[in-house]
Length: 424
Ligand SMILES: [Mn+2]
Image (cartoon, rainbow, N blue to C red):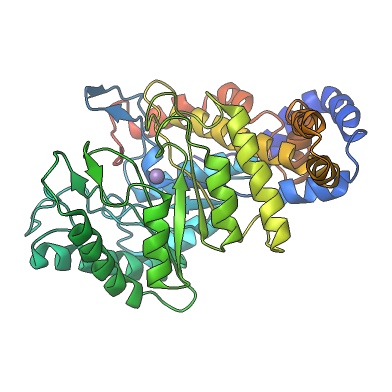
């Protein structure tokens, strides 16, 4: 299914008058509106190929129907999102859930939808049918060299798929860890992981990056071998300049100050990018901005200030990806909400008066410093994002258009009510 430009403009026509009023009201208060709009127009968030089906928990999965049955249909779904919001112009593939059997035709299909391939993701947290060695006790940290070799070769194979598709990063998350005290020698597990990563690192093409994701627990509950940003950074520093630390917002201990972690990784030139989601208790993988939008804004505030300090391009110099799961929502509607939440936090961060904030800090004016941040956070920036979308040819209200065109019903008709997408 493909939406036409005509469907989008005729939907927008009815909303234009109200939008213009709302935009004028907000734009008047922004000192450099052209700069903000341009940044918003450029900003793109990659959609993971594993988030296009209904998510499940360890207790069950309730499919919503019309889920993509193959990689082609997943690309079609991301194409739909991008047509609606013009801010989802990339897809992040997970191997082996989405192996591009015919890379040139997959690449051409993605290009037809205006999509590029973001980081490719490997998987050594599950055993695949016919796999020789099991990852039950880990992969890159495993005590058995043969298991480590198998996991290394898998990662190198994923890099090869990525090269064929024009990707330029391997994103790696390990479930390696231990469930009980005494199970693992921490130092040896770390050393084996490092040695395995060195072999993967050696297979990276020149312009490629290796994203090392960390997670404090799950599926192992006593220790994980790359548990936090410090351990990821230690590995990245030992590996070299292509290795960077990836921050998944749901992978921290409760109440961790993620914005501070981000600020320092960025300062060190070691921040790879993000897996966006939101959570209340653990790695809940909820819709971005649904639980704690203020934290997301504070993170973007550090990102904008820190990237500007290093003259980085906001849109292209870090990896921006969603990593969420949708148990009770239509995945496409949920992803539209997530991208919107990211754009809102980014736009608010662009409005922060950084000079005034720095002056307040210098004079230890704590009240003013807080007010400056909250002034930006409490600005309703939705008309600015809608304007950027309009300028890019997208819909003023993506979810409403998706609903009024009955896209999900159409997908169910085309694909069936019982389809199940590969993924989480
Ligand atoms: Mn993640």
